Length: 343
Image (cartoon, rainbow, N blue to C red):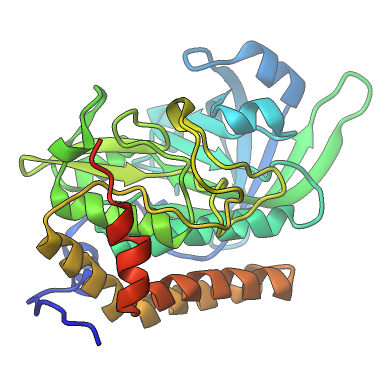
């Protein structure tokens, strides 16, 4: 039997407060899929762009009335592993103010778009599962990225004949928008995890354990960003394709910083959170257990987005197995309390 600390608030209450008081741009106020058309040369984009160099292109999106509108945008490749290994690299967009003004994209100067790694079977379901991970973190913490699922028609321009692909993607807001919502700022320098906010750090660590992700580092800001809000340093996670929840066909156990981990598969969970006050860990444990139904309801709400029923069921069972650990004192002590990091 769990002995939890009584709280005056829960994660769900945090989310309600956010919805009431924090401005979210029009683009991310709905969970309806956005239809996009993108046209560029994948080969040229990989060759000509980097972290500081952009290419100019146009993209089209379907409006609420069913018509199509288009914008000129600057675009570049982004990412590390996916950029090197995937057929379709993740993208970063920078939309000029004059182009985005008065459109669905108003207020979003910068955006990220995640494509599936390839067109092999199951690729769209990988995207959906990664999207679900972002939505789960909306329950875990008020400090999260807003995301939207997209149905994308991509025309890859080639010298002889263009090739067209249809797949799902994820649109992700910029970290500056996350910070702005809380009147905070983005931190770019390295900071030791133990100097970060205890509650937010444990919420983040529990989430990463829930989705079976070890491919992150808050100190090195690998798949994590840091924001400074109310005199607190808060981690904000992203890029979950290497997690056990997503379980892509290219997933490998993380070796962030050259560290070898004692697991052989991404579907083996390993808690990577640091040692914190036991009361804080107990609070976060209660938050997650209290909101178990809400976490599962979020996953269930996107069931129709999956192409494979089996992929959905595996994702659901994987999340359920996390709560089975949290609700069992012996398992919790073994797999979480017994794995707390000290350095």
